[in-house]
Image 1 (cartoon, rainbow, N blue to C red):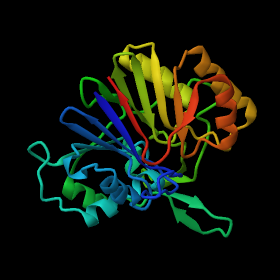
Image 2 (cartoon, one colour):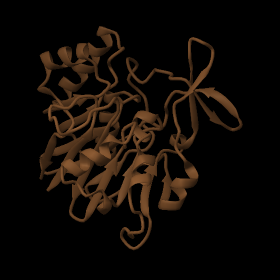
Image 3 (cartoon, rainbow, N blue to C red):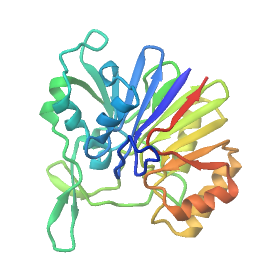
Length: 280
């Protein structure tokens, strides 16, 4: 059994739970507990308590990419938690694309810069064994971190958001660190994605290749289509339709227009804070 709990996203339909512009999900299978993203402000920690999710049992932290609405809540967790416990005989594993750890920034209309990534690397090194990988990485027999997603579909994955600091210089950030989890179930793949800056069609194509599986049971997470042109959203919907994707539970950065277009062509629902998905 694989259980996925949405710890936080932009909306909550449960008055006990906080919502914020960000994403965090918790994946449980056997003895493995994967915290996938940490939202922006740490609300996921309080939500986890209300959802009876024991974060102290986390074995892996996985970041989908290095933007604060997916990584910013980590420090709240470190500040509010007792990390004297030992996970699986050592530090917790933290998995991410190398670019996730780069400093990132966004130019404002005023000409000033706002940070897009405020990860505290020294604090992370204290508590986590950090693995930065571009290649797919197997976390369990059923779950892979996909690493850097090849971008082949011309209607997506083209965006630049701010700049990233690498090799001593600031560069336009194509968000090459954007990744996802591919989870094998009895009926096919579940894809858990944070923002899909790489493009959800690119993610689906690569997940199928990496996992050697043609069937897609569900796509859960943000699809980053809120600012996309209708023609690009239609192309996305058409591709997912061709792939016979059985369900999509979109949230966070997907956008109302995209939800409407996808909903006309696919079995599409929304994922909200507190939602739980279970697969065998």
